Image 1 (cartoon, rainbow, N blue to C red):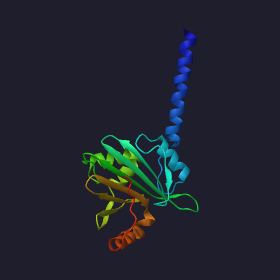
Image 2: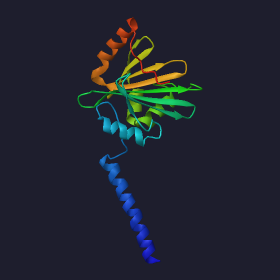
Image 3: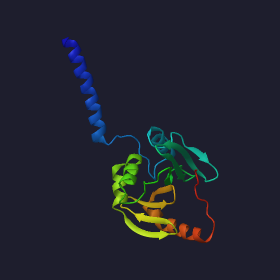
Image 4: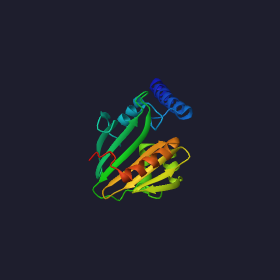
Length: 189
């Protein structure tokens, strides 16, 4: 009996120590963001309970995409990478919901909760406290301290994009150009 108690104590102590090391060294499940490589992004998507478990190259959009059924609808992930080093430069979450009460807005608790589940609480907070920059067409642009965010709310479809801070001006210019000419927009559904 003493041996069994000692064994269980050691087993639980070992798990506690490993958990503490992970917590204090910053080791956590992958949360991919622009600037990370495709391998990390694929691992993040595979380990997520929300994101599509597999991303495949989609030549129509020159990006990696995937779709997953979620409660009340569908969720798609679009990841644009630089060809030379396979590093993410833009990620977009697209939802299509049967009852679209969710909104990717800085004051929408459900939208912020989904962003937190997909990324991290820090990213959700960065978006929540971001500065509104512009609206071009139906797309809203926000500048956080860590990233640039765009949102688009259409009938049943919601879009949330994350880009590096350095991409803000180029993204706005591209959106302005798209108002005058037809641009390819990721349409997963």
